Image (cartoon, rainbow, N blue to C red):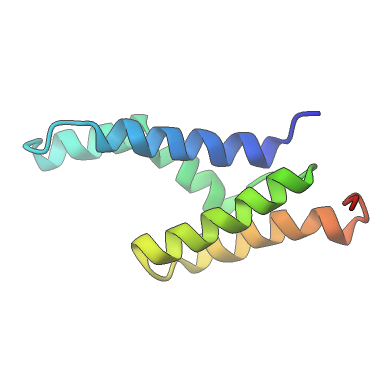
Length: 98
């Protein structure tokens, strides 16, 4: 079973790695362009319209992402609220299995 939230979280994390592997001496414009083609679109989706978790693994990884983002970047209310809502949808809809 695939989980669209899990897929989004994994792709976001992968794109962060791609971005972090870029040369450190990029201009602001180059940096902005790289954000736009790597993690930026995934971050925007996580902040605005993440899909609901359909597996326990997806819900757990979403909660881990919120934790990691808070630790790394500080308060991000849009990401926190929307990703947690998407993770909790699994439990609210009674789809979670022990």
